[in-house]
Length: 492
Image 1 (spheres, rainbow, N blue to C red):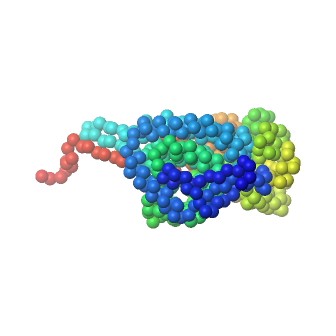
Image 2: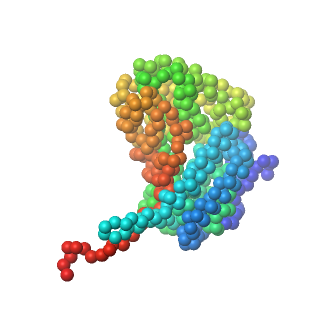
Image 3: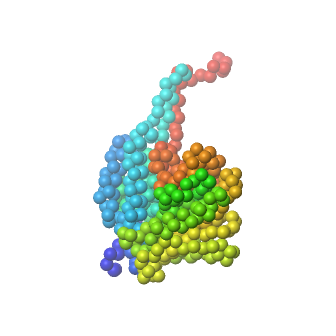
């Protein structure tokens, strides 16, 4: 094994479990460099993990909320202490710049702390005294949760599930993506150490492991973040046992630039550029298509290019001057390039943005120079498909009605943004079909963990973050205690 390579293990019932087969994880900035190895678990391993979680649930569900919170707070402190190590590992295996990796850990901790601070109030039973007696509204844990998480934000999209699930009294089996398995496994290990054996289990593997996690009768809930296509298979696998689900899926999030938007507001324009290209555009809630009122379209494009060329600096994720690293994997890079090529072949204008700071590593890794696409057709692939990479189309619209029609003409509805005078922007925002709409900001910059997040249409089911994100891991249990249990109209 080379220097700086790490090997991670599965965690089943509190024990590290080694496997015969291991999967290497490359550094997308230098694909010849292997960062570490993740286990390839079998379906039998998944069954063992589910059974361990099921056994642990019988005891864990009876523990006090105070005990659960105290354990989670200890885990939070351990993650804080390990942040320098974890952020470097995440940057190496994922490709995101170091500042971005540190930011992801920050968002994860922010949510975990919110969950701890609000769990007792949100999850405690409510007792209502009324004229007919008393009603208790309890929030019971569900059981074993299967969490399946993606590669783009592996830490935050795992902790967004772990914290509320365990605080509510559930147990969990988590399966991360093989395209970013290392840093998240370190975080899961730190959390699992603070909880009884079997409460938090970690498995890796291929499709057979995922099938077991989504179909096993001992799984009470599936928490999945990923593609809409995969979610359809998950729903089919879960159908026989009618499992509870939270699905945060794909999006083709739009930004509407109204005619009263100040194109000379450089800070606002910078926020928009960042909302297009942060994490090389590989965020579910990134602004993936930009619609601009035709009255300001030319001015907008000129200023956008100016600001984008200042902020975008592509290169080695460990270079402190770099703002954008490589795409996470070769398949994704080739897909994004195919969208650009398709638009170009149909007459669209393709403009590369920013500077390449590390040309040698750029040619070696999965790098793409961020690209803006002008003069595309509204139905071109780069407009209607979720590109999930550093390429964004900018298109004109005729009026507000036209803009709303263009935005809503999609199977997706995760987030959106409207940019302009506040009252005008809010008026337009109310007509957009999306789980979240942000005003004069977008993507992670407008995310607030205190409030619910999720999509409409084929962008998902259920909500994460906020108090709703805690309650999503419970069943509402109503206990009625009437003064007199007899119905008044039943004869003696």
